[in-house]
Amino acid sequence: MSKKTKIDNSKDKTVKSVNNNIRSSVRKLNPILETIVGKKVDVAIRDLQFSDKRISKDIRKTISSAVANAENNYQYDIDKLIIKEAYCGKKFVMKRFMPRAKGRAAPILKRYSSVTIILSEINKMESYGSKS
Image 1 (cartoon, helix red, strand yellow):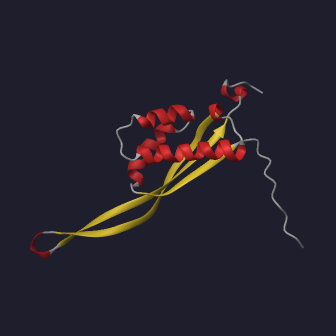
Image 2: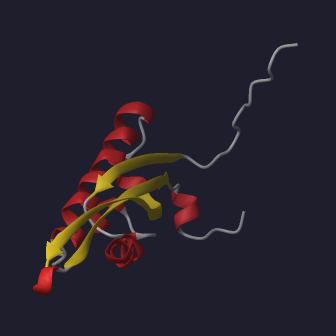
Image 3: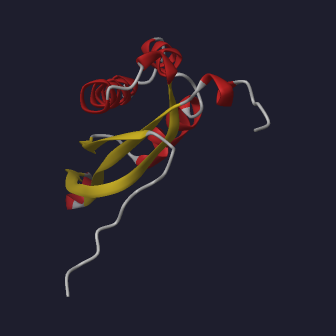
């Protein structure tokens, strides 16, 4: 018996980009990612450009990578791309110690995260909310 191959017949055109080992905690990344979901790619990149957060540069790089994947691998139109999903997850934690008074030590936890950006191409009909 041979294995059956799965055929993906979904009409939804999606592209994914993952950035592993970002030097920031999930708690700091989540509010930034929540603000860009549902926006067009150029608007999201512009918003991150003027953000005060240090980590927005890495998120901007991940979005740019997803756009490059969409353009080169799937020949999608860049102007029609929106951010469908953006989420982050925990990675490893580096544990360091800082010397304190009376010979004690205090732990320092340096947390890492991974960011996943999923882009989707929308049609003109979908963007205006037509009832078809």
